[in-house]
Length: 277
Ligand SMILES: C[S@@+](CC[C@H](N)C(=O)[O-])C[C@H]1O[C@@H](n2cnc3c(N)ncnc32)[C@H](O)[C@@H]1O
Image 1 (cartoon, rainbow, N blue to C red):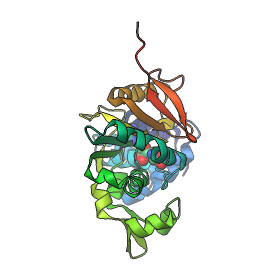
Image 2 (cartoon, helix red, strand yellow; image 1 turned 180 degrees about the vertical axis):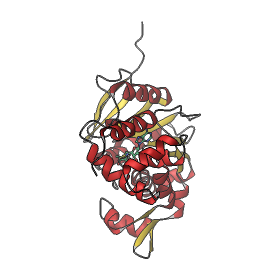
Image 3 (tube, rainbow, N blue to C red; image 1 turned 45 degrees about the horizontal axis):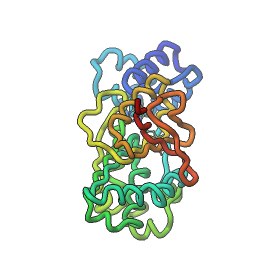
């Protein structure tokens, strides 16, 4: 049975209020595709019944599962490669010189999805900057989705996911075979602090970051939401820190606190220096 307009409206409002993800008209097929399995797993005959149940219950675990199901978790190892190259060639060497006194580096990977992005970064650091092993490296990776965070903590990937962007020598060096899957070594998993964090809610205490990756998530939000998130990141980013966005994202005309800088073959964003008067 096709999704009823009222049910679509209820789901779009629920998802928007909870996560800021905007589901525009025309996305009915997506709601059907994503919520059919949730209805089935909950023993409900249809999405109509699922919405009835959601409406009748106080906001709880079923609502959370629906919101989780509506997130898009597309990701891959070393996605878009250039930001990782720029980190390796420019950003990390520069920051290591600047932070030689304190020997601390703080990373945040917001919207980590199933973990390929933080794990790619951590493998790159292990591979090319072994001296960081003696530094105080804090690496926080966050996502809204509890399902995705569970996947991150487990760090297990199937052949298809492994085939997307992971260099063979990294597979051999940093993964263990588990039946038909591959699991990233515990040493890499333990080096990352995976936390549940909703970007549109208060974030709680966070350190000052040297590098923030928030890629391919702002595209789901409206402009005021993007601006609010970028302004809050600006307050957490070191004055000489680096912000990385997805290839289709920018701070330009959204948040005036940053200026773009082309480094290698990627664009990153730097906190603007206060204007001296
Ligand atoms: C397309 S993935 C991006 C993954 C990775 N950053 C990349 O570029 O490959 C978007 C992720 O954003 C998360 N997300 C969506 N809305 C969010 C919110 N309000 N707060 C935190 N994470 C959110 C989703 O759960 C999903 O895992």
